[in-house]
Length: 150
Image (cartoon, rainbow, N blue to C red; front, top):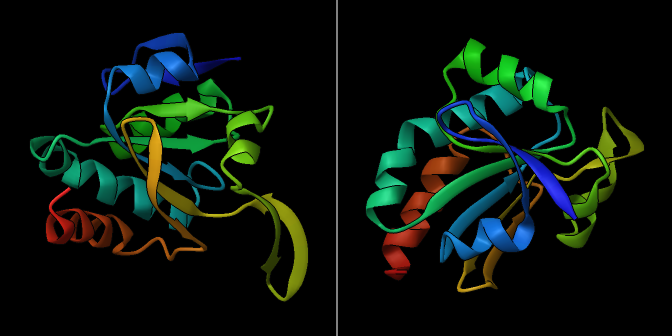
């Protein structure tokens, strides 16, 4: 299965998951519900602001949502997002990483993206966090990586 990937530079490329992961032995893969919403904007801006620190430690940050590549482009431009974003409208990655399912939203159960983050090292998930809060999440992930020395 191929995905549209909007690179940090704004280029769009179709890539298979195997291609994405083979270029980066350590990936912070985070799933977020929707471009240009308050929580998702906060999370994307924070990961972007810390991207160079992640890279110094050998980690590549990649965001994933079901939004279209056109939506990702507007999101990146509006907020100056500097990390790559994957468009997953068919929910292939969402479902394979258990980031899609039933969740509570305003007291109701709905189907949707479960805000999740995965640390992937050499093709293996070494840490996962589900139902994370957007604010300060990027810093918590970076602190964890530093603390664990991974």
